[in-house]
Amino acid sequence: MKMSPRCTYCLLSRVHFQSKLSTDDEDLISKTLHECLGVMNKHYSPEAVSASVATKIHRKCYEVLEDNDPYKVTKKLINQAALKVLPAAKEKIYENSPDDGELFRRAVLASVIANYFDFGIMGFDASEDKFEAAFLKFFEHGLDVDDTLKMMELLQDVVYIADNCGEILFDMIVFDVIKKLGGKITLVVRGGPILTDVTLEEVAEFQIDKKVDKVMTTGSNAVGILVEEAPPELLKAMKDATLIISKGMANYETLSEHNFGPIAYMLLTKCECVAEDLGLEQGLSVARLMNFP
Image (cartoon, rainbow, N blue to C red; front, side, top):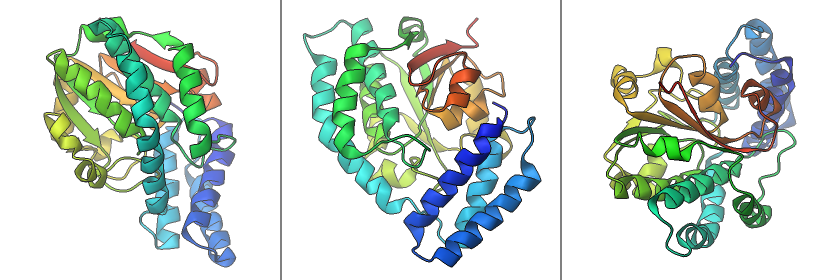
């Protein structure tokens, strides 16, 4: 996905948000914004990939702040909030013993709704006290774009590219269903801390590796997957997969620039620019299969 002019102020808003997470020093916050504005000025272009520019800006932000994980405390809070809602989610998913197709659809729906766990997006409120009510509302509504039946035909060898903390606990329900249906799962997480995204630290904390067949990283702390920074073994796994499942907007922003497939984008269209790029409205629950022969 290419940059929109709207990406500029959204990115800078996020820089300000995460700077305030890291420090109360207003001079340092001003310096960080100034340095990040310089990066924006250098790299902004309508032909640039949005997440690639975002990666450069966030790396500069972390460098100036001298903080390699401004969201460290926030990620813990997100996971705690997710754990509180998880029992209600599982009850909804398994209610009335659904058949395999309905079970997979419900698990995907819950996982997509959990993409709501995102902090720092301008104009988007992901506070804990609102999440359970939002979850139940979205679950009742269902998927706005639902390609789950087509996805079920492709679960033999899945590469599952994770997104946020909190959300990953709901992804684990999808892992259970894929394994129940006989599929193999290679889980991909970030190679280092960036925003609220899952890293090997959360994989170890919640023993997520026991739910999947293999765990890989994106090779760096890039926003999404930058192919030029990805390990060769990851690119091979993606090429050989019967299905790539890409969670969240950043993964969409990077992977939509390539022809990997079949690929299922599972996300909430929280961002107007991402929604438009998908040809959708903002605020929809999406499980869209693309590059499918």
